[in-house]
Length: 199
Image 1: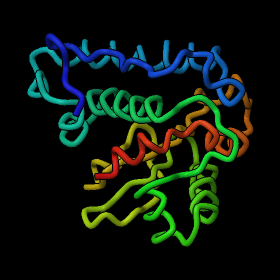
Image 2 (image 1 turned 90 degrees about the horizontal axis):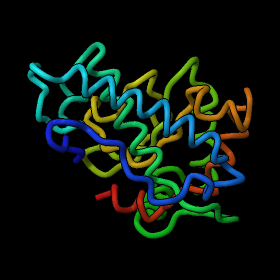
Image 3 (image 1 turned 180 degrees about the vertical axis):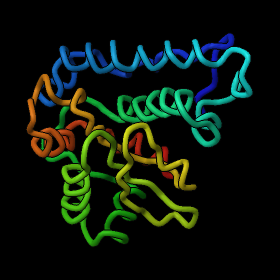
């Protein structure tokens, strides 16, 4: 749960240096995506909250119950926090382990089949948004496409893994090649983080 500190939301602290994800994501991409785009959402939400019913609530509560500008900024902060905090230094042949690996095989047949479906849904999402791996109330894994600032929380799902398919997430490094960007991201997914979210 992400709570405000002294009444304000803060930028999530990255568990890696901005250059640590090279060659998948460059320091320049992280500088703009994390340092400018996410910072703007944080600033906008903090400016919008004083005097509203959402003041003092967790980010997740705000996402579940708000709309309009408050929802858009809160949703983008939560989405980006989940995105940036799920990465680690690139690892060739990176694959899930533990309970998430077992659940992926159970619900998709194999990791490769899961990757294919996940990438197809990400590449096929029209416009800006996110592709998510989430768990429903029974623990079954589902892949959803979410437009703009939407988050699976609003559907009663628990978000586990996400790829940002807004153009600003990949244009510096991949230009308009969204599928190439998505394929590369598998090298930097920290599956231990995904396992920790899968409770």
